[in-house]
Image (cartoon, helix red, strand yellow):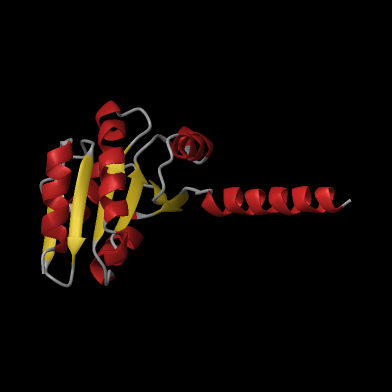
Length: 163
């Protein structure tokens, strides 16, 4: 009987860990994201990506690793999916979970790139991958509208955290 009790406890703990680690993609409008970026009191990296974008998928693990190494500095990583409406939320959720994308997950509920791109950067045409590095405490706001290399991720993280 005591053995069964231990098994029940173990299953309960594992279930709570699994549920606690599950991420869910939330729908967001560009105005909400822009306001969050403007008012952020900690360093943030925002990656614009899609499940069908191979260069996006290639660079995300490097960014996740860099953010995890700097967790003590409260760097936040936000993944903003530009997937088509049909992918929200199921395909994006399952893709992110399968690939262990442990970050804040949003799906951008916008279709007019001429409207939403300038709110992130005046030069952004809407191409992905695209990354925005922001540290409002130091005044850093750097947009990169192409795939990063692993080395560039390291360099950008250093700039993001430079006092």
